[in-house]
Length: 286
Ligand code: ZN
Image 1 (cartoon, helix red, strand yellow):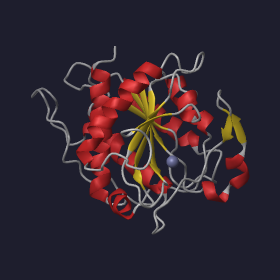
Image 2 (cartoon, protein in one colour):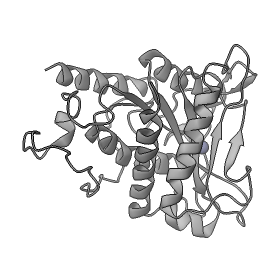
Image 3 (cartoon, protein in one colour):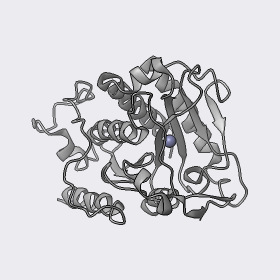
Image 4 (cartoon, helix red, strand yellow):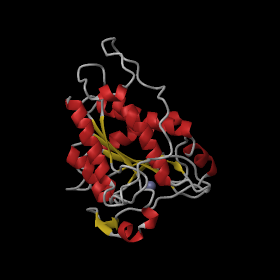
């Protein structure tokens, strides 16, 4: 019963995120329906009730082999589908501790017009059930792809207030068209700001970097250093009190990367890689 309440609370939290944006009448979320998962972890015992719904059971069990039981994961699908229509709100300057930045940005898109906001939303939708099936409580920083915001400050605050174990911000880059590949961004030590999470965030970055290579996306050849970037100018990183990274899943402006990033099967591979990284990271996190 507790778990059902928790799940309901989760929905409410998520639902409130876009409250500042649209009228709230939209009921359809992203166009991609998560496919039937063929990658659910094998049950490690035969004691689990034979039910088809793994998510409904996910948070009830703390005694079976669910590696993420009791863990809270924040997924931050970067940007939002209607940010472009709200320039004043989005461009409002917010304090990120190391400077000021825009509340949010529109994000990039592929040459064909596939928006980063749609991509990040769809990847998040695919990742949620995978994490929940392993016992995690998953929080999203926005409830759909039809609104604007929230600001990066609010996105970071969600993980902080929930006392999340880990936060992953999902993005894809808008680099030069010749450049290919993914990179992972983590915060440096900034005294009084990230000194408490920098080390774990770097470890999370290394874990995600390793797991993500299973997707087949190459390591970025046009930015970052071997697929790693350290930045103190991203509010999602500087304002976080929980281990956090940005995944730049590929370069949307590159034709080859764009074909992958827009492909449903590839998005599923990304979701699996994120899930794998979370499990691996938290295995060694007290
Ligand atoms: Zn982005």
